[in-house]
Amino acid sequence: MADQVVLITGAKGGLGAHVTRAFLEAGAQVIGTSRQIAAADFASPRFTPMPADLTKAEDANQLAVAVLARFQRIDVLVHVAGGFAGGSPIHETDDATWDGMMNLNLRAAFYILRAVIPPMRRQKHGRIIAIGSRAGVEPAANIGAYAASKAALVSLVKTAALENKGSGITANVILPGTIDTEANRKSDPGGNRSKWVSPEKLAALAFYLASDAAAEITGAAIPVYGAGL
Ligand SMILES: NC(=O)c1ccc[n+]([C@@H]2O[C@H](COP(=O)([O-])OP(=O)(O)OC[C@H]3O[C@@H](n4cnc5c(N)ncnc54)[C@H](OP(=O)(O)O)[C@@H]3O)[C@@H](O)[C@H]2O)c1
Image (cartoon, rainbow, N blue to C red; front, side):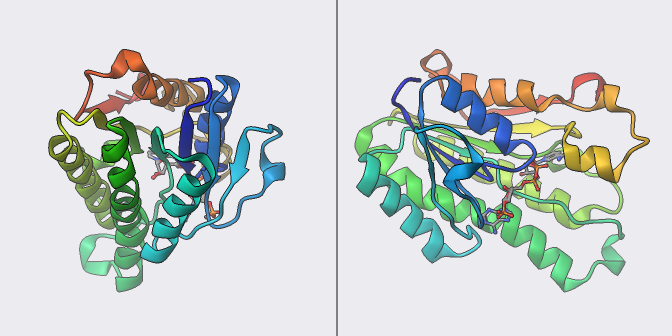
């Protein structure tokens, strides 16, 4: 992974920080993006912060242009950015919740994939790894907007795999169960953490999917449910 150019969205979030550290420790050039991100977030000369609001097409496009201008290529995209809103059945879900989930979990993915796939096609090489959710393939009551947005993300990533078959690009989506993040520990202090998924292990899987060893894996939606299965 040394000197590979790796773009990580949601780079300093609960999971994203582990993903960023895994790639930095392996010697990659890491461009970390989110709406607010700074060089001080990761103490490495190979970390470059590039802020962007990925729900805006212009931001996603400018981000890809800026990465290419500085590093000439984008070898890997790990699209971690996303979020959760829920708690109501469909008939009580407001437009803001629906739009928020579709914008953050689906529209942002579309924008960043649309921005990075052309340079990856020119390079004849690329690795796309997106973070979906177990809820994207196993919906549950009261999380309709979130689950639908993550289900559509699975479809989008599989489509990217099909459209870029034979062009050196792989595209896969990881489907975590509840992740053992600080935010989840705070919001659910009584939760059964033995059933939560380790962010380090998710980062290791993302790293593997970005490696040469995973060149034959594409179009996969990989469940990572841990003991929560
Ligand atoms: N936590 C879980 O239990 C769990 C379970 C299954 C799947 N997931 C998925 O795993 C991924 C990471 O979850 P997490 O718990 O690490 O989330 P998190 O801590 O909330 O981090 C989300 C990241 O996305 C960034 N972000 C939010 N809105 C953005 C926007 N409009 N444009 C660009 N970046 C934006 C945030 O940074 P800024 O605020 O600076 O923009 C932050 O870095 C998400 O896709 C989530 O859906 C999480």
